[in-house]
Length: 170
Image (cartoon, rainbow, N blue to C red; front, side):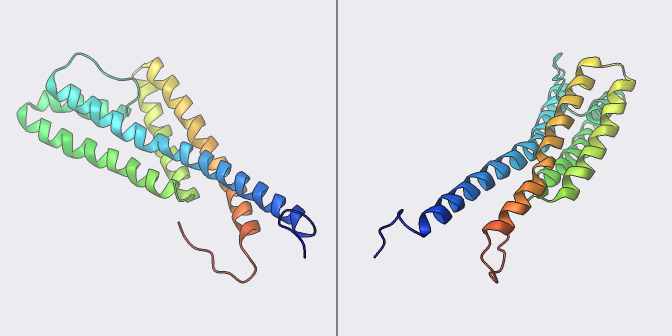
């Protein structure tokens, strides 16, 4: 009788372990890339709250559209603040939705979220906020890096799935 780790099963066990490790790394890459969507959403909402409170500080990490809505809200007065929170909350909510689906390796969420963020980067660049535009470029690179991990993750999931077994969603 063969002992564990010795004999015919040893190479397949090492191969399986290697595949599992690669899959975990690929999942990490995808989830880190997806995490940028929620980071952008949270920081945009913080910027909106700071703007509504009259604070003189602002993070470069937020959305350009949120900054534009904040400016319009200040011009509208008290009624503009509620509308500011609703509009910016909706936009931030979209990014949270992209985050949720991107964490599940849904490529459409990465593509649509990046497209919206590119449009936002163009708005920031139009207002000549070079630091915010540079951050947008960096965040887009990191999001793209996460999306680029999806094919490897899918290949590894297929390699690890036993023949005939249903694939379980996460």
